[in-house]
Length: 488
Length: 89
Image (cartoon, chains in turn brown, orange):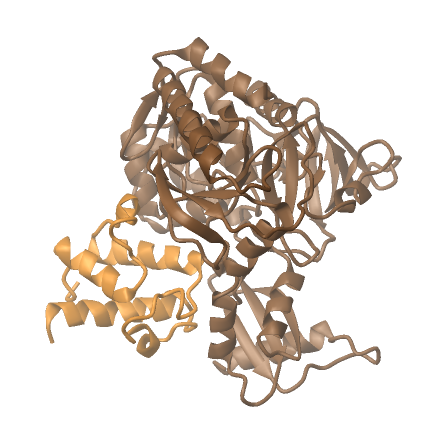
């Protein structure tokens, strides 16, 4: 029996008629959630008995491709109860990414709330639990085996040109939730309002299982976190905790009204991208809100928390089960290495890559630099070449590969700040005279998640290069700055 | 100029402003294409929604988005018209 299946059953038995889960259309008690997820598990087991390809082996691998909702949570728990393996995927991903995930991870089926990009499905669509259920075409090829302990798979942007699929044991997911509960004192009866996508570590590790373990109510509205939308739910739910990316908090500041519900929150969480210091100060000054910008890594789990966050106080104290080391291990600061009891096991679709990032003592080598001072972790900067746009990580190699398949001879992808302070993704591509920026953007749009499509795209005849033929980054940036200044 | 056209023109100006001219007003007024197709990112779309709600005193309910997509400028303008928004501000 899976660890998480048991955890959810215990939670239902413990909290019974307390409110468990809600969105704008539906509210479920723990007992009702248990029943709904039992029904989902039973129905999908029956469906798979008939729909499975003759060659299908092992536990069914099912991608959840949907926005936040009570249906999403019910499907996730239902899949665990059916002893299937849920793969939690960003519903913004495009055709290229979806096709890559299906083939590299050996996906069997999708539970989805929208049409899928690409052409990976076959057979009729079945409706289950308010979502769609579709079988994937049989590729007839072998697939990588899952570890016996794996209960959930999630994705990270990777650095190899495609999203890496992290295998998590049920114990690791449970440990992450228990560590979070212990550090944050989340209690029965609290109301957690979560606007971050449940596929993302921010929501998955701090809100989904922790809320249901504690006996709290998890609110999962769908839609973008515009100030109007967030304010509506703040007033309706009167949450004790709020979970969202920095864009949510910046959106609230654009509304010139008092939002008294913010001052009464016990915790407001942000992660994945730094909250600008001025944003944090303005939230404190205008709304009495101190946002906890904690540190977490997809492969290692949530790592820090500060019950009394402040702009000068770093990113918080290590969670239970988290150990940091710096540099070669004897240094007080430097490149951060970390291990935890909630680490992923490996990348299903990139054998050996995660293992190579672990040292002999099981510490994961991060791309960040920092130090511990007075027990708190302070971040100094990033060493890796990954790009972070509003909390979404982008592998430039993946974007370049698509640009170059679309006709660019060479390209450089980087981030730059707009005048309003928002980060944007920029591409400067070398190509023939007939290659237009609109065509190249449309090519990318058809293949990549929208956030991976360069907001500013400049096509030039050739890129300035070093004597080794590599693009000279500073010169390319200068070309872009000049072009942007002239409005292209 | 009709109220709808006034609303459309002003909304297109806001698109150009929040996108810092990635989507100029003329491009925003081209019918049919989604704002994402025109080059607008999700962060800029969030800024646009905030700007429209503030200027026209409307509320976009994204829980209705499954039945009522809000991907094009025309869709946004029609949604605002149903809430009584006027282009005169």
